[in-house]
Length: 431
Image (cartoon, rainbow, N blue to C red; front, side, top):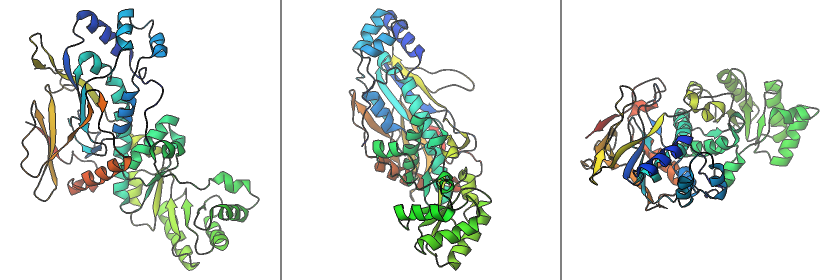
């Protein structure tokens, strides 16, 4: 269902991308072959793994990265006329490799490798970073939440807590990381993410009585609907809900209070009323820690909003985009790297595989410099072709990314299930 935007994405970038281009064109170095890489220097503090998301969105954005007349007009006082003339014919003609969407990542994983000319590749820095940093932050938080939830479903409900377009991207990223549905209808239309929703407190307050509100909802949506039961008195609302819908009532939702205690009380009350199959859904500013704390409570599902769309305390992944190799004056490729105690990079084109034990458990992230590392027989290559000679070749259904994430997370060591702070689950080894 995904499709490139009809509007150019070329201005979704930083001013200095174009001033660098202008200077490189004037210096006759813009056409030098170059390799850029997008990678994390580290994981967010205490996180044991991260999740790659936004790959499909980035490919769509790349296809719409064109400098049409409207865009060029906006750049009249940004860069000179020769640069604008060059931009008018811009088409990315290089190759892009990357970790597939849904894959787990670790410090220094070469998540994206861009091979092209300096001019073509440098322009993509901000576009790629903005998409990958946001979507991967949401997916990384979502993965921890679905891990804490176990077999209980998680529903994305964060649209009202972030920018309207970020809400769509968040719903998509959460679905990749195991959420079952979203409240966001644009995510449903654009990406095929299942949507769900019933009513808010305003619907109950609209009616003269809570019973009237429940009758209206059940009449319209059926007995399998989810009734919000904490507008007034929870016990009375549960009684009314079963009275109106019968024991076939689909679910009740708790959105406030001491959720573990309330869930126990509501479960006992539902069982006494014969509604033994009625589920209990909880919301109320949940994160992975709150979900883990509810593991022993009789809860059947979680609705997550604010903490999900803000990355549960880590709204960006800290990815960077660095030149690691470029053509020298003699035509040969030369490794280059920034030298800094805390912001350094490793020069040379990278290759990566996930080293696994004979039992299929991940043991290390092996990153080869200049050539692929040797597979010892149980390993798994991580870089896949995304763009070849300027043409997108890596687009896939969103469910493929979702399935990949489940498999990638399942092969990680058991310590990733812990919500406590820790070191990366596997080490990164350069070879």
